[in-house]
Length: 275
Length: 275
Picture (tube, rainbow over the protein chains, first blue to last red):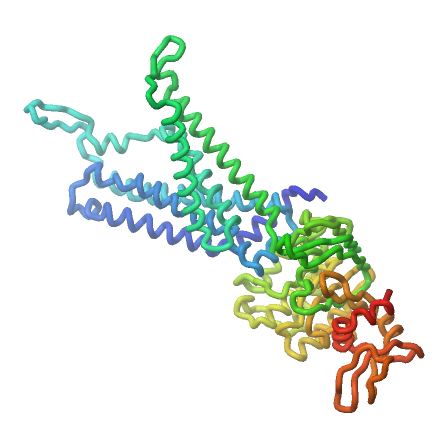
């Protein structure tokens, strides 16, 4: 018998977790759907019923809603995943289920970093698609060019914002951010197993403290290293030698490495968990 | 089946609960684990199940180190904790989610045990009384056909008829390749059930002897007066209930409560008899 990973056992574990937490998970998704629809409804209702002229600005709430509510949703799911291990009766049953620590850890990754993120994105996308489709059907005849006169009296022609918005579809622009949700869930997953109570608050406070200390260290070391010095451009070292894409790659790499570190800590904590 | 060698364990490094504890347990026996509050009964059971980690020493359970929590061992352990949690599902859903992890799970036996315990099958586990939940978890544990059955205060919460049923079921559950360890402070619940007594006191095993050995070496009887042969006595209505060395190979029934108190009060007098 393979005591580290067995696909059949892993499948059983996924099924067991789903039977135990599936209902709560689906309820959370319904709540999330309700919140998203409420935001869209409140923001776009006047456009839909036709009492307010549609403008591209009316859709500006979408990005912050996606980012902030998405962060809250996936972090809460991750923060609750191993939380029950802080309670003795639940921990005994779970730790003694005949599956390896690695399988239990992978199940955690599946539910928090794959299922939670994917379900939120799909939920948001479908709600967004429904509302935007409605707006498209109502405002399809809007001119694609806007002409206005600026302060100096000069006539300016510009791309119509609505059409511009509708035609804009560049997910590649956000590729560097794809690692962020995994990073967020990895932090809150480690928090869920590290703390025995008040997992979410304690994790959030810990993140704030560590980020504060880290920023201070970076700031102080930068000050110490570069204070009173001037950057001189030369052929060997041009000032703008780091391109945007290089910076993004470094950022993504840093996130990936940190995510892997947090997942490793989660695995070790799960392995060492005592009741 | 179980070998414990020089086990040192403590919840804090400065205060050890077990100091160089060693013993061996074999299959085909029902062990009764007794001890005062805080003597470490539950902790010893947790060590055997791999729920806590020892400071030093070795633990061998069915050829495995329980601290590694390997599935091959976990599927051979049935642990009935004193405090437990059952999810808000019906019995069949619980079985569907958990039984598949135990390759020897016996569904007809589980159904028969539920019927014997008079458990309403259609009811959700969360709506059951503590005693009913305990019976479900005991029935499930026994139906796993695990080789090592560990029970921590199994009769807590059971009514009087259920205690009798429990004794009957446990006696019939013992097979040649099974080892059953029952920890309790309600010693009368184990009357006529256990075949070996293990008593923990002062960081170590104060007594480990079979019922046969105990009744061969000691006699439990009522006396009118206490003389120097009496190891330990407690006043009763018609004199004293006493524990004495069994010099004349008298037949007597083991009084677990009296033995327990005798071991705690007169450890030094009993030690030479059993060594």
